[in-house]
Length: 605
Image (cartoon, rainbow, N blue to C red; front, top):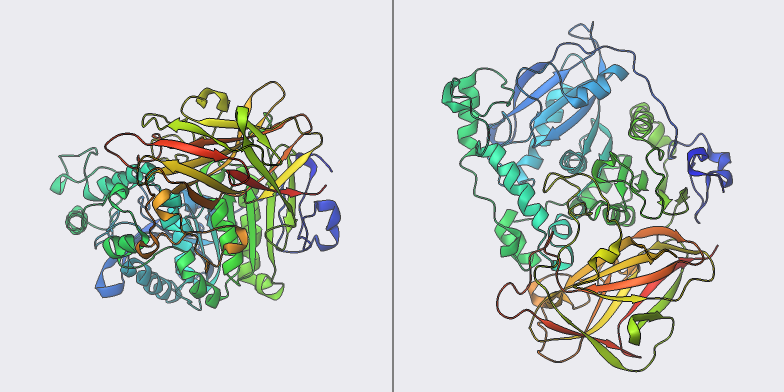
C-alpha cells in the first residue's frame, strides 16, 4: 500500500479497501480526499444580529453574515449552526463559522440556543425538548428571508454537531444535509461510560452553567446590570440583561456522581433521552445525507459513528481518524511522525465544502451511499468499507500466571489488586480532550508509567503483523470485597524496546454487568442497559462474570510487538470512585478455563 500522505480514499467495497482498489468510483460524493483543497472568493459582508421568536415565544439570538456586495434579495444557500458557547463576542465583526463559509458563497446563520448567550429562556443542560423544537422555527424564519434560496445545511463541531443532528430530527423540508463533527451520539454513554461517572462532563457542565449564569467570569461594572463582558447583544444592553435574568432561573446542574441508572437520569435530568442516537429513527425519516467525523481517541465519538452507521438509513459518509476532539491535532500512538498527517484541518474542511455542495445540488441524494472511511494506526493507511464490523477473526487471549497473556487457558488461580482510589491517568486522555480541564491534546505516552495500581498481562512477541480492527470484547471473572465497583480494561501494544502504547479501553460498573440481550448493538459485543431493573450488585467474595465491549480501534502491530491487557479498579483523573467511601475494594481476577480473557478482532492480511 502507498504511504498515508499519498493515498486518496474513494468509495469502498463491502470489505475494507484502499484507494487503489476503488478508483472506478473516484467521482463518488461519498469519498475521502486526503489532500483536498478549497479556496473561497467572496469577502464577508456586515454581520447583523436579530431576535427570532421560537417555541413558546422565546426569543432566540441569531447572527447573519452574507457575502459582501449582496443586496437584500441576493439569493444564498444557508449554513446553520446552533451553539451554547456564544454565537460571537461583543465588538468582534464576525464569528468562526462565518469566516469559514461566507467566502464560499453561503449565507451563515449562527444562533445561541435558548438560555445561552443573548437568547432568552432557560438552559437546564444538554438540549431540552424546547431547544430542539426551536430549530423548526429558526428554519421557518430562514425560509422567509428575501436572501434565502430555501436550502439549508446544518453544521457543527461537538455541541453544535449534536445540534445539527437534532435539527435533522425535525424533518424540515428546507434541510438538505448535515455535517456533524465529533458528536456525543449517546449522551448517557459519554457521561457514564460503562456506568462510570465521568468527571470531565461535570467540569464541562459547570463551565457552561457559569457562562450562562454570569458566574466566575469577568464583570464590566460600567454596563447596565453588571453584564458579563463578551456576550454579543442583539439590541440594547437592557435586553441582554433581561435575557440573563431568564438564564438565572434554570435549575442548577446535577453532578454525574449523583446518578446511577439510566432511567434515573431520564427522570431527573431532562425527562427524555436527548441523544442523537435516541433520535435515530427521526433523523432517518428526514432522509438527509450526513457527513460525520470522529476519532478513535476522542471519548466515545468513534463508537457513536459506528452506532450511527448501524442505526440510521440516511446516506452517509463517516470518517474515523486519529485525532483529538474536533480534529485539530493528529495522534497515532504507534507512529511519531503524524504532525502532517492528512487530511489536515484545511483538507477536512475542503471535504466538507464538497459534500455540502453535493447536498445543496441534490447530488448527495441522487447517488446515495453509506460508507465508513477509517485510519489504521501504525500502518498509517486509510481504508473504506460499506459494512461494519469488518470481516475479522476473534482471537482469544487469557490472563495467565506470571502476568502473561496466552492464547490458551492455563492453570487456575487468581491475582489480587487492592484498589488505589488515588490512581489516575494522564490528563491528556481521550475523555479530557473535549476541554474538561483546559487541555485539548491526546497523548498517553509510555503506559509503563502507570504499572502501579494496575495488573498487566503481556503476550509473547508476535510472529507476524497483527491488524486489530473493530471492538475488542472482554470477560472478567472477578471477586470483590465490596458490592460494587468500576472495572477498567486497557488494551496496549508493547514495542520491542519496552514502551507500552495505548490502543483502546473499556470500563464497566459491576452493578450494571447484566448483558442486554435485546440491544441493537449486540453485533459489536455484549451490551448493557444501565436500567435499575437490570441491576445486579456483586456478592461479597463470590466470583462474578463481567462481559463487555471495548471502544473500537484499528491498529497494525508489527511482528515483534506484544499485546498487553491491563486491569484496574480506579482512574481518578477522569472518573469518580465507586464505592466512594468505606474500605477500598480488594479484587481477585481469576485465571484458567473460567478465567479472564479478551477477544481481539484480527483482520487477515
